[in-house]
Length: 87
View 1 (cartoon, rainbow, N blue to C red):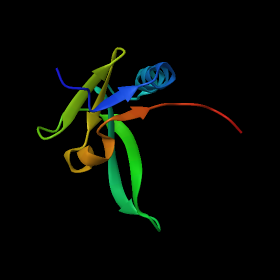
View 2: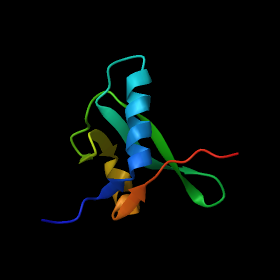
View 3: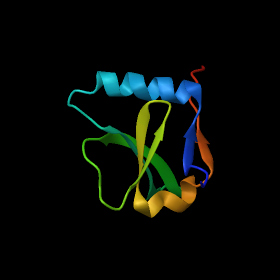
């Protein structure tokens, strides 16, 4: 069995669950990817996933689904998604 593309910390999974619960429409999970933007050329994005794109990879971890945009896959392999609040 190979390692998952992306892992979620407990804090990230809890926050993803909270975001899904607050969604105005039913969603399957969150979608992550990259867009061309800024001085470095790329920025990450997170959005609600109402349906799955056939080319996306789906990561199921700690009871939530994360849909990884096919064009961004190489940027997420082996990463861990975390969440923290601070000033």
